Length: 251
Image 1 (cartoon, one colour):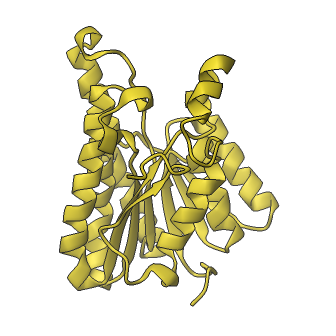
Image 2 (cartoon, one colour):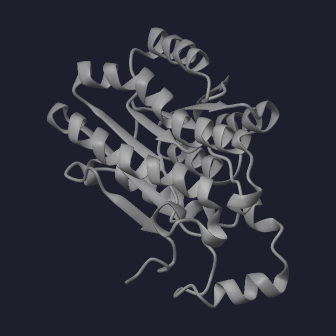
């Protein structure tokens, strides 16, 4: 049992900033080869540069996860080069906060395309090779919004997309289990990313008072949970929807 990912390839979507960046750096620090799929080219390349400056190995592919053909092409290139994807972390996502009566159908289409279809697309491209190898770790980043129905964490559309990720995670875990594939999801609570930067101080203060641990999450809090689920220590865990939220979802 170890947290050493030497010889493992970890593919992370949305790895250019925030939670995705923290996940990428965490895997690199544990000797994984890190591959990023993102549309934010300069920031993603900066993450890879940081990984390499610390002696790690990383690659960046400019990929829109909502585009199945782009995903398939990039994964095909990865498999040609490395022959495998050991770990897939579906982190790419966008937030939508308008009340439902102000939403446009285009908003639904965009959010579902990135947050839910993006997870389908990467799994569609990677899962068959995992089945063939009878090994794989998939961790999907959902949200407590998918359990609570949005609220301060996003509106009905965002909640629906993340609720879909949760259901898809459980279903894929059932299908992958007999082949040694673990599929789990993490539901972050409010985390110190760009999503929270626009909150005024008074709203931040009142919000923190509703969190039992009395602070917002850090991207690293999510990254550490991802490392655990991708490790040998979590070999008997699948279909789990893990809250990393400071206690918000306690009953």
